Image 1 (cartoon, rainbow, N blue to C red):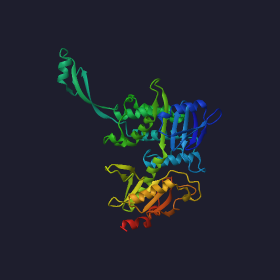
Image 2 (cartoon, one colour):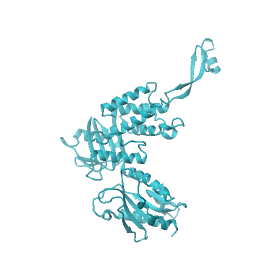
Image 3 (cartoon, rainbow, N blue to C red):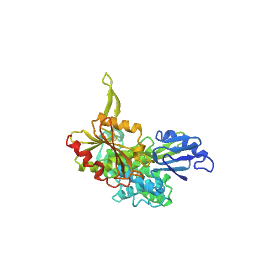
Image 4 (cartoon, rainbow, N blue to C red):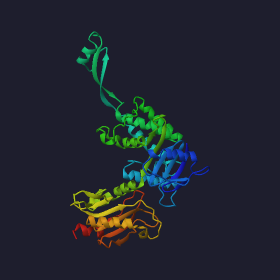
Length: 417
């Protein structure tokens, strides 16, 4: 398996002795319909991943796509950034970035995902494999449980020595275990580290009593687990991530492609919300993601047009937005962050201020060289008088300081001024 590291919005040249061989580019193009829409952009003998980061595996090639906000980060630091964002946003719940081997650039991103899955699974198996009671109908030589009189009359009328019994038995072959076994079998084939593959084979031996999911089965989701199974919720969510990324060629039955890609725009929104939520609560306010939703205009018939959905809104006790924040996963090249603002950005924020009667707007970017945490850039939106703040948010998972939602931003609106 050849391994290749790429960066979001970074071109990969196609050709002999270049980043992508022609047959590899052809395999990637063939799998494009199975990947998230718009994740690839093609040029003349080159291709790039857009705002998606993660892993893609096709035809003997494994491509890991890393975020690149600054040229000074090493590949290991970029993997660390992505994993930290996933952990804070809830996509990889419980990931331990300190023990995941991030200090070495030789560890691939996919192996880190798989190692996290193996770590969570091993920790749960220390408490024993999940088991549950199942009703079993069987014909035996002696009574076990109770006799099913209907089946006895139908099947054993002339065989009195045979008894149609129904009994309950504690078994391990239950849906949640079949899901985990299926995911475990998949990641064994994807792991590139021999040591990791050996660890996974050892874990799979614990599932010797458990079958795998059929091709048409999906298995339970984290929300469908019962009280006894709820501790497996992070594992179940991660198992679905792996299995949903597996694409099969229906004609040959072979694995055609595998992808585990994350839209960095959406991931940055969820990460930002997770970092802001404790700060908002300390101010006695509420945080809403992707809302409140409101139409920009209405037809004479009453039909709404152009539904607005702010990335993040900070609301008072009356559910009125007092601060609207828009998360921008974007690299700032100019020394003056204000110079990077586009007309679209300003029109959008001005529309929010007017439509929601909100006087405080924030554009949040990842912290980078020209926009450090705590160094806010401010301007006034002339049409509404609203204050627009540009701010950076750290990507290392640390708490956000109160200066981002400072009293001078919130207090006037809490007091109803």
